[in-house]
Image: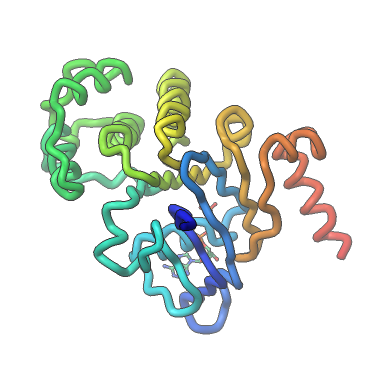
Length: 242
Ligand SMILES: Nc1ncnc2c1ncn2[C@@H]1O[C@H](COP(=O)(O)OP(=O)(O)OP(=O)(O)O)[C@@H](O)[C@H]1O
């Protein structure tokens, strides 16, 4: 029996206003145990696609499946966690309370000792009991990341959350992503940090004007374009000449 992809998009289209198509016939998949980079110019539709996956926007055209379940279905919810690009967290909660609530949503009680260790590791020793209101932008981002690391969902979708955290935390996060992959979990990492993708990602999906224009193993991109940046530049040159 075929194991369904953790994420599968088939012919996904989307328009906010019914006129301009933001996504046009998007087909993609993320399988078990892979780190996939989602890249594309500003406004190419990356966040829109991610919001559709989490049913934050209403899917009207095409199919989006999480582990074989339609993304609007309650069965899809436990399969994936979403880290938004913003740092909006409930400010009136203490970090421990926030992590507890996220754990409750996934039916996992918080391992306070593990949470405390991650806070120490990520340069936030002694801050677990503090109000989120008092956290800096980077600390909020790190709290989002730690929540994903603790939940260890089959699929974690990270929308630019790693941008804006310090280098040390990025390094730790990269190591954790690789560890999660070795456990058979997957990560869809939407970022403009191509060097991070060259270090950790297996595959890169390139979205331009709502269309997937490349879906290739990172090693092939490095071999044929010398890197992800050059692949993007080559594509933009081609587009300009057309
Ligand atoms: N709520 C909204 N209402 C109307 N249009 C929107 C809305 N959100 C996004 N858009 C438009 O949809 C298009 C795709 O935006 P989206 O945020 O998905 O791009 P992105 O690839 O994530 O960009 P970035 O790299 O800048 O984060 C843009 O033209 C944007 O202006």
